Length: 229
Image (cartoon, rainbow, N blue to C red; front, top):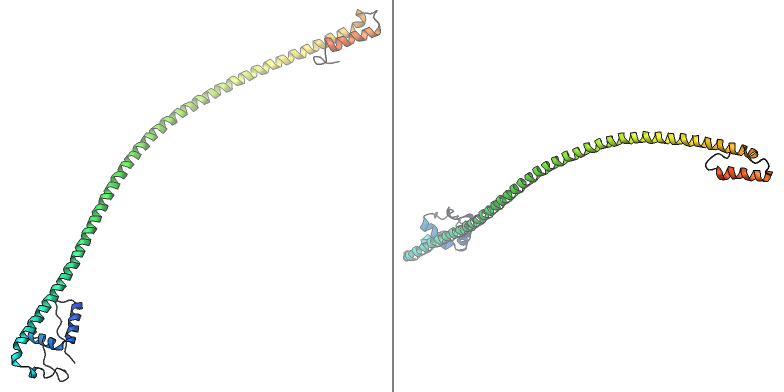
């Protein structure tokens, strides 16, 4: 079984997994990198690469150094790529933070404008309420004064109406009394004339007397004025 190389603390977990996959695909290069980094262990009997070091030719030192240098350059490039990726992420986060700060600033300006508008509206409403309260108080006093005058006039009119009513009642009673007196006098006068017809015209025939009585009863004293008695 192949021995795992120590993890590089500079690389993130994803990059370390990628490195391990590359090592499994090219075990020879991985072994050379471990020898160069000083992290290679002696092969165990179970290692399929056992005895590989004994087959190495001393003339291959230059190739080994070149491979190790390429491995170091590869690590540096991968590290630079990781740094660039982190830089791009930080750049995106910086742009997002800048945009969020701009939106927050705009929202704060809008809130300030709305606050000022509400304060002005509240001030105008307070002034209008104060003016309306003053106008209402004045109108209330005017209506109360008008009501008092109307009640006073009503009381005066009621007194005058009562006096006028008594006066009219008195006049009506007098008129009724006078009418009753006149009716009595008319009735007496009618009876007197009717009773004296025979004395006034004793030589008239009965038919003429009846005519005079009819004339006195229904023409001189009609039934609508005095009792037909």
